[in-house]
Image (cartoon, rainbow, N blue to C red; front, side, top):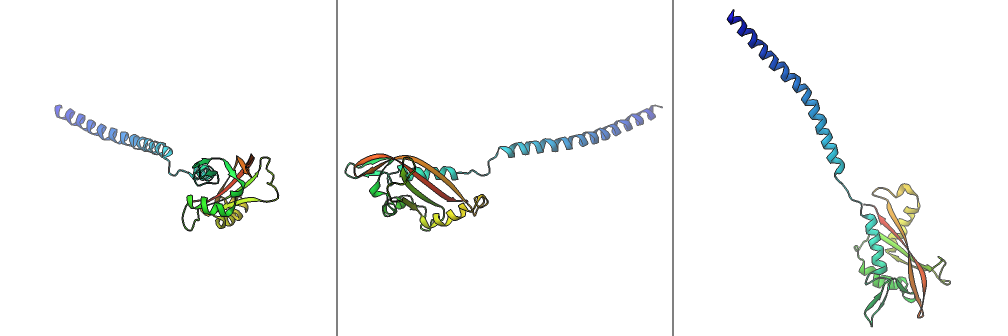
Length: 193
């Protein structure tokens, strides 16, 4: 009788251990998968894959054209002083802009990245006199991409489209030694990358 009890208790223990291990495995594996997926998606949500700096780059480009050392702002060579936000009407021409500003803001020989149109107006937005005061940075690119931009919102997204930025800045306009308030409109078109 003693022998029979030992065999029975050993058989129960072995079966209990095997069954308990299987039950724990079936509970642990799905729980482990759920926790793993939760951790994966929590971490994935916090990682930044790409950073859009296009707006900041266009703003920086605008600031360089208006307030930089070689910009459209008036520079007194005798005093070696820059007057930020002051524009001499006589110097606001495509020739002056091409000689002084474009070489200072250099993207490449064949610039297919950015173009700009600067329009100088009266403070109320009217034309100055009977002449249009308009200069371009990378005119060929700007004219080409302006058509694409004006075609509609569907063409503004994706790698083939362009993004635009229109900035209006109050400036001081110097004309024949007299100063008055004016408005400078800076329209920038930048290729999406």
